[in-house]
Length: 598
Image 1 (tube, rainbow, N blue to C red):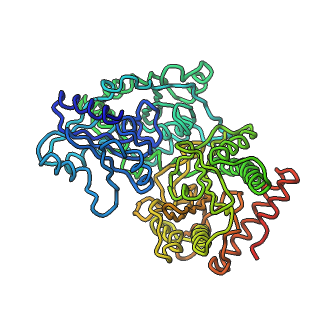
Image 2: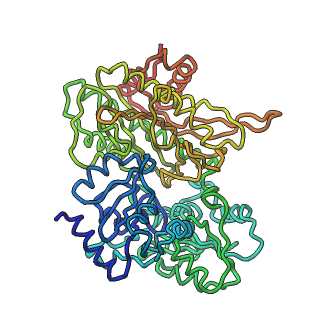
Image 3: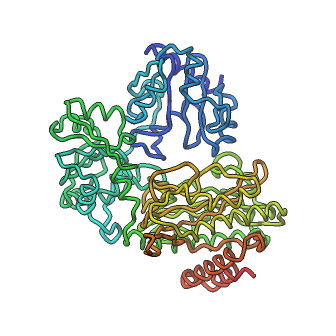
């Protein structure tokens, strides 16, 4: 029997002792972050599936994993010997979790889930959708079945100066008060580590790729309470933050703090970002609960609107990152076409990190690097550091999607590089993906425009060939925070959050031909004011990247004159901004890469 089968069976025995007929195991942690500490990788431990998104459901006789299109191929491979069925989300014929459970349990029985991982909003929906099945929200069962479970870590936090943040914690707190407009005493409960890091102007290193502390926070109209673990606070940081009106408590005391805080303070939180466990504690004294009705929460929304200091930080980070990209790209070509050393996906990923490390402000990668050659690139979230290390050859495409954390900003860029002879289909697809990226970059749109209204500008060109990519076109990017940030997005599905000045967003159309090749071209764009007319306010995008786009695969006729002109202007700007930071060899290389497309 496989290790996964053993674990599932052991978990089933524990379920029986608790009179549970099924159990739902989501990805995530009590802080609702995309990346989590190893302590919370319970879904991965029980199933063997290592993707970042998915939900496992176990009954006494069956088990299944629900995940999205980014991970269909990976999940099928990793679940092969597990007896866990793969459920492909948004594929016709795939049942929802609650419909599958009703069929499995014949509409009788009790379904369990960890109430520290299920939000208040999700619990209400689950309870309704599962009827007539009963939902039983339990404590964390994995403490009893995962014998060598990693401990939570709590490393020293860092306090960012105003030169990086542009605003003090008290200025941010005043903005939150103005936005919430709550006219009575309140205690805001903050579980999300990126939101509290933004509010307190702190960063940490407890979570891979995200400069976050593992922490909670709560605040009133004038005081911020920060809850961190042992080792997070030094005397110097303690003194600096106390002067900013931030009061420290231990991480493990958060639940009792919000339970015993005077009940005349109404409790406030986004229902999607407070666990059922914390909600019950917060209201246990009879205190009133008021949901934060702002999409993504007041703090998440304000955090998405970057101030001028943060925007300048993004631009500095982009210059540092572009220098590393240029060095790595030239290194690839020198070795691949100059009879140099053998290149592999991993060696290129590590070389990019080496070049980034030459910048004194580099603080690590912003996500696990994706260097994908040939058919590997057809997997949108391919993992370079798992499985076989693929050797690069002079053929097809090489897709590189990578980003970094710098002291003053966060980066995320994708380039697809032609390494050899391409088919007409490959050139057409590359050109249409690029056309979509440029078309969105050139958009002018009125105030109040949502991401779903902009999405087809990027998606439309590749759709003209009856092809489509299933992921979103754009996600928010944090300022030296999480590389994936809300509440804004550009995707097919409607999101009520309008794209507004100060929002920094990825722009990454793509196409994937399974088993053959993948193409994605990604820049980072900033929404900014454009024009005020008698019809109202209009916005536009500014491209923040300074990294060339490979011209070898472009069909100029397909790209169109407007996009050709945009590309030439973009490349002219890249050379102007970046060449002063390069030596003569790299400057000469960049000059050729940024020459006009004729």
